[in-house]
Image: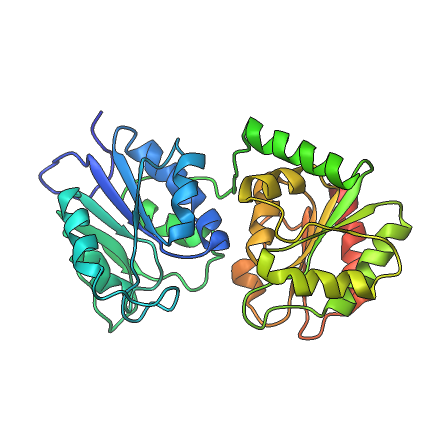
Length: 334
């Protein structure tokens, strides 16, 4: 079936598509609505995600939208990974070997990523640009939509290319293996009552203090919920600080969950309390009530779109009573 994307005036079909989005978990989850729109517009196309090493597993999980993966060895101007100049020629050769009909630059506004997108050698390249900056193609590049929430930004490009209107809901498919892994984890730690997940970690300076998370966790424990602390292996000191500041007992799972197990853990919880980080978008994707604390980042861009189920606290120094009040609202809406 021919693609419905309007990218070639000759009407040539789009059979091989590269999608450049070499970013972190939250960014990739926010791009799922665009992946859904792309698959509907080009149901027979082979779609290759070009991303960071960790994102390889997303191709397997989102196999209804993605087919292949290419690991980006960094690029000058992109801060997500140091540039591997020696590995870059081999990466380009592999990209050119795919003979992409279309390269979609969904990495961002394009100041550095548009050059990278063109180097991938697609028959046609599309993406975002800022006025006055490099715009590779006057027909297939559109102004970067600074005014939209993140899940709707990639959709803007797909709509401009003819994919049509699409819904902006996030999703995260759970596998039976995820549920089995969660069941084993719950048995091992004795998590046999309704629970709330508290995720105190975050990248850079976006983190609320462990003491504040502990105060909220204790209040949730007084409501009869078990408290489960989550984080990466590198965040054990953060979860340990939260547990140490609590008066109630908590189960600390830092470093013990895969992405799939974490998704299942969130899906079975009553509430998630977290900083503005990838866990916020994962909670939105599995549709569990959440409270997301924004201390430095832009809530207009990054807050979940379902404002009843997911409550955003937008304060430079968020108060624990404000977060608890929003938790009550989220639990009622859940």
